[in-house]
Amino acid sequence: MDITSLTIHELSERLKKKELSSVGLTKEFLARMESVEPKIHSFITVTANDALEAARHADKRLAGGKDITPLTGVPISVKDIFCTKGVKTTCASKILADFVPPYDSTVVRRLKDAGAVILGKVNMDEFAMGSSTENSALFKTLNPWDTSRVPGGSSGGSAASVAAGECAASVGTDTGGSIRQPASCCGVVGLKPTYGRVSRYGMIAFASSLDQGGPFTKDVRDSAIMLNAMAGHDPRDSTSIDAPVPDYASFLGKGVKGLKVGIPKEYFIEGMDKDVEAAVRGALEVLKKEGAELVPITLPHTEYAVAVYYLVATAEASSNLARYDGVKYGLRVNETGSLMDMYKRTRDAGFGGEVKRRIMLGTYSLSAGYYDAYYKKASQVRTLIKNDFDSAFRKCDVIATPTAPTAAFKLGEKVADPLTMYLSDIFTISCNLAGIPGISIPCGFTKDGLPIGLQLLGKDLDEGTVLKAAYSYEQATDWHKQRPRL
Image 1 (cartoon, rainbow, N blue to C red):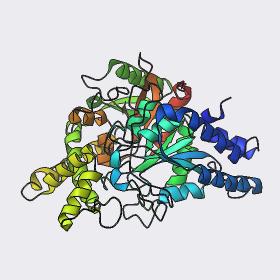
Image 2 (image 1 turned 60 degrees about the vertical axis):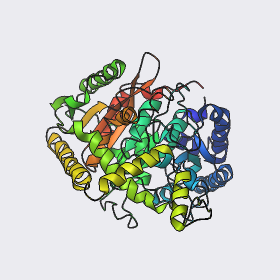
Image 3 (image 1 turned 30 degrees about the horizontal axis):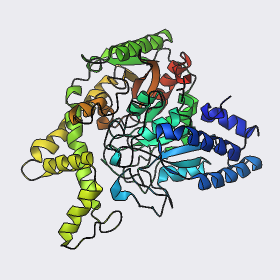
Image 4 (image 1 turned 180 degrees about the vertical axis):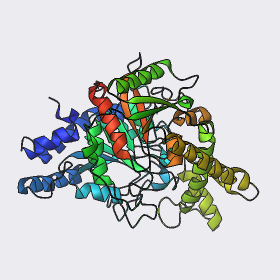
């Protein structure tokens, strides 16, 4: 048996029974990484020595039988957008290529406290701006199922590292689908919690009203385990929700009999890949067979979601990325000239093309004379999108849709056409605008052998019901057990 293909809960059982040691397990994953990393390119920074030290500490905890969690001794990866004390945090950007934070983000600290072993930091689209991980300023990550294709984005390194067996789980961020879409592309489970459920402290900001951290895992139970460790109020994050955090694992195994699953007509559109539509409709029939009731619903403002998102997100990006000016930290192009010259040269050299595009779009939409016409109007339509979901959830408990309109596309296929690239997130963006939780789970393969994802959306703070429905579907199928051959 390949140990690196096991789930968190399977590894945890073996660690508790002393069938494995965390040090031995960490070495297995590091060896796996050495074997497949030349084909996948998931990791920006590998922290082998720190990981082995954490594993030794975990083995002591396991031997003592105290403070043990399901994550104790389990190796994971972290998207390179989360600050890690003493370890480079680049956001896959030249402007932060040598930035070493003096503190851990709340998410990283909580995972460390739970005993997780962090193997390193994984690749992403620069500042999380992209749907393919081709916008990384460092290198492109490849899809483990077909290395001529993208792993999705912006958390492509996280999704690929889990799919390739380089770690037991990973942590990513989701601003417009950046957990769910790559999870779909790579055939793993990706969970985006309710906005504010997971602390953003120490998570480098792209769009502050949309960004949310969440886990990538090999199955739904592992997602519940990871969310248990990550979720909770954080006074250092002003947007963190002060609400009780249930044991998410307690929702699993309760079935979906009587659960109302909303099917929005706006998410089954012309131009969607036929294999994707067939797989998702097949998944809906499985849920129906398991006892769920399929309910037709409408989300009428869905057609405006992409336009709204690319006004709100770019405006917030323009504001957030103003801090990268070469003065306090990060890259400085220190040539003779004025302070303004230094700003311009630093930002020109430090930011990639997509980041510059979004900063300019956002700055324009916030500028005098255009604010009301663009940013204000987008914010108003965002409220209408949220209202659509509120109305829909009066008729159903969860909403089921495709995660993405296609499976993973070819490298370079959409790079020259930003609008086509942006449409890759057409089914995931509304969830972020509304702030609700969503999950992508494997539900089939295309005729070319590429994974397809089913998206389930839930009410605010109702991740438990989303996980319950996802687990019920997962246990009735075996798509999540498929692994790529590398």
